[in-house]
Amino acid sequence: MRCGRCARLSVDDRKLDVLRAIVEDYVATQEPVGSKALVDRHHLGVSPATIRNDMAALEEEGYIAQPHTSAGRVPTDKGYRLFVDRLSTVKPLSSPEKRAIQTFLDGAVDLDDVVSRTVRLLAQLTRQAAVVQYPSLSRSLVRHVELVMLAPARVLVVLITDTGRVEQRIVDLPSDADDALVGELRARINALAVGQDFATVEAQVTELTDRFGPEDRATIAAVTGTLLTTLIERHEERVAVAGTGNLARYGQEFDRELEPLLSALEEHVVLLRLLGEATSPTPVRVRIGSENAQTGLSATSVVTSGYGPGELALASMGVVGPTRMDYPGTIAAVGAVARYVSKILAAH
Image 1 (cartoon, rainbow, N blue to C red):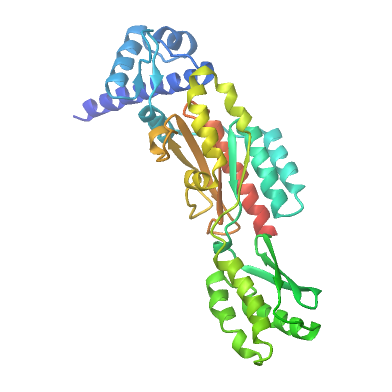
Image 2 (tube, rainbow, N blue to C red; image 1 turned 90 degrees about the vertical axis):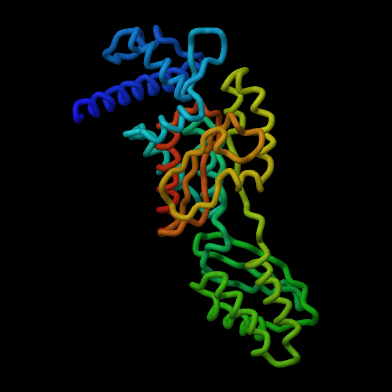
């Protein structure tokens, strides 16, 4: 019995080697892979007849398919999924790539610059379309709230989060206010808000108006109302995209899939759905073909990772491309960039 089980495992492992070779060749050549090509390019240690039998078994089990009348086979979504799930090692980034990540991202001057550099770097490293979500306001902590008098009846409200995200709103006051009142309001807001999450801030700032005299409450309400609007009603999340031109290099077979993908990349709601909600900075997640619920993206794979300064991810980043992407290299790049951006935010 034990020997029989070993034999079955050996056959499974051998078929996995064949599948791995088919995936690698198809990604590299964009051409269906035949048994002769596998014999010529890979040292699988078995006869051509055995490889043909293994390919037939893989096809019967739905891991590869024959797209045309040629003898070649291509991986299916199920085949890519098995390939990704059984990756024993992820292609390590080279030392120059690691140095490039560090050098490029270390030069960022603020959060907007971090996101802009990150999305361009991901597109360059993976040669896919890259998407980076800005850190979510709802998951951030308040670092500081600044109130700046622009005119006697106009105040600029500046909200700064622990990730460096900055939101600004101009408030037109119902009547003129003086520096003393604005200064007192600034101090009270920061005493309540600094270091707190937004749910806590909402509850405490809502009660702040009643702590001022009746003559000042309309002014206080205008400022705190704008602050709460910034905190609570900012449902639309910002997303940066780069590298869409990379998708044109995948040839005619991907051309028919390109239009719906490009349309999806223009819709931030769709992008956020593609990225998914990250709950922790790791691990890297891969959704292949039909695993993407978005209509029209059945030939697309999405590789994503959460990022953030601690155990809780504040946002997601990732790349989008055809299912025949270089999964080991893409997974390594997304994971490495996400880890480095997380370190930047932690040190911010």
